[in-house]
Length: 105
Ligand SMILES: [Zn+2]
Image 1 (spheres, rainbow, N blue to C red):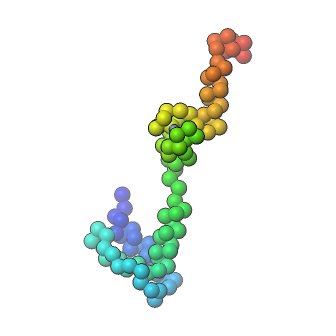
Image 2 (image 1 turned 90 degrees about the vertical axis):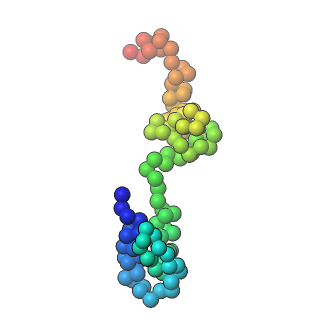
Image 3 (image 1 turned 180 degrees about the vertical axis):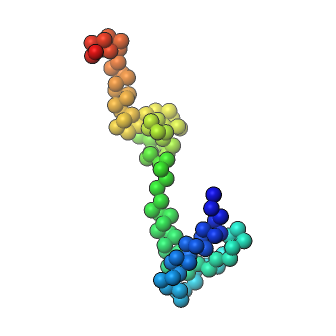
């Protein structure tokens, strides 16, 4: 796990290189690292945070609106299957019978 203070210091240095005299927006200390955050750094940080997409984010449940879908698009809050995949599995399960299985093979 990277050290947060050093991570932010390195990020700010990358952005500061383009506009080292930009107005200072904040001076903070994170994990013992003093940081001067200039306006372009804050804007870049805001854009980076807004653009982040968690790979575990599989959208919201069609049924309860919960954000916690597992890799099979089953909602961890209400337990129902969601999305196109969920509808297909639900429809398939509803029409399944052992005779259907034998007839299809
Ligand atoms: Zn749900």
